[in-house]
Length: 111
Image 1 (cartoon, helix red, strand yellow):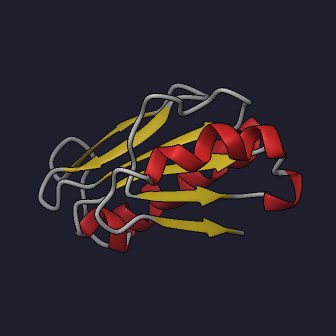
Image 2: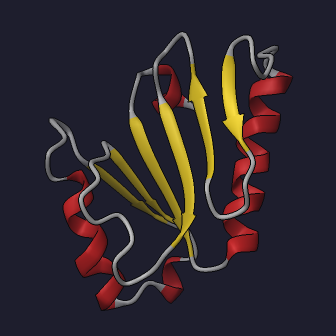
């Protein structure tokens, strides 16, 4: 939520699609509990495997995806979240580590 409020472009990755979708639902629910309304304060895309939340006021965006060996190539993010990090492979790391290199303050979180 901090990243959304501070205008960060965030990529949240998980090993399984169910984990990625669950994380999307949690962030959306947290925003709604804070009084934010979908369509008024933020937009959300719920398509499984391509979930996304964009906060209108802060300008932050978070995308939720499963990891692949070429996922994220050519894209730039400020914050990379590696959920289910115990399943993180060297091939996935090679594909994702460059997604935050253009950020002025790149952050990677493994959980």
